[in-house]
Length: 261
Image (cartoon, rainbow, N blue to C red; front, side, top):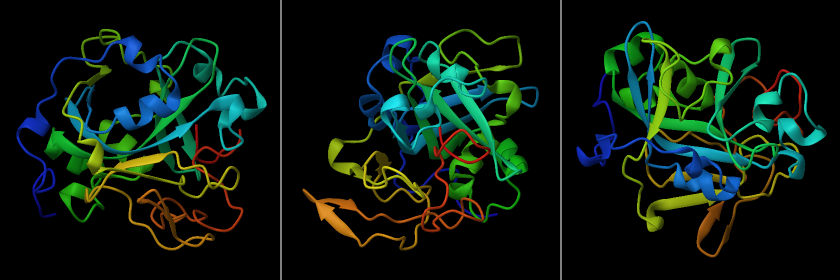
């Protein structure tokens, strides 16, 4: 594997975690939290040591107000954490092989979450490489929702983890840190990836030009632009065997064993 731990455009200042974010940060409306997560750094501790990732791509899902959300049809045992307090981790299994991670937002009782789609490893690089041995470049280690969760070591047992509290024990916990958010001019927005319902909602946000952002190919909708912001309707071929098929599952599409919060 070759390349720097982060892209050439990421500075030492970008790698500095800074102070942790408090619960009030996550208690806001999901479409406010999602773009504000870009540039923030999440550090996850585990038995093998910590790994830090700077967020470069996210997607917002608005629960009962959003047909593409897992929580659209109401509370289930699977989605219960989404209806709880903000600042908790929601993990779920997709395609029988991958875990994905989301952070719960909004007030307690209102299910909404942000899918953590991609990031750049800023600490714990060697451990991240061990967890993603198939990544061809270091800036692809946390590329895509499955890769993001994998490098941080998140899976079933991390569902419900409080991201605003001290670690649950000496070797298990995670916190979001202030990091260094990008300038607003460096943030792009467009439709969510592979969504079969509410497909035109531009609730995917990413740092423009970041190499860790998912690679896309043309999807089922024509490319267009709104107010200078690209709205491509593209899909990610590296996110699972059915991603991008017309009417196929979303990373937040329904309460089945498929992607999406």
